[in-house]
Image (cartoon, rainbow, N blue to C red; front, side, top):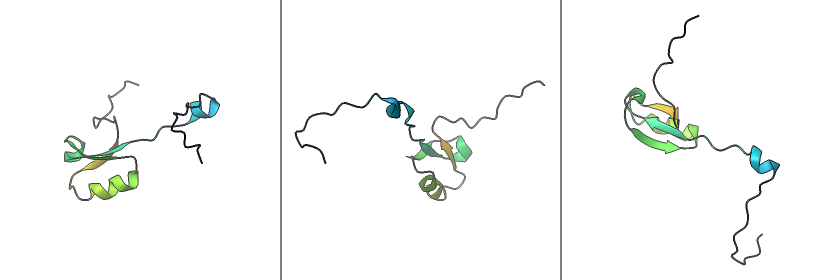
Length: 74
């Protein structure tokens, strides 16, 4: 339990803070991934449950594009 003084605590800059991973944000995107974003959350299970309410929607991580990768020459 904190001291209750109302002071702002300084964030740790140690090794543990540097290795802490951020949360992935998931979006429910309408029209097969080409439409607008209907819902955003960090819980992939919740995003899947919400996408059921929007026929044709897909769940994508934030920043993901729905375009196929470019073909590479072997």
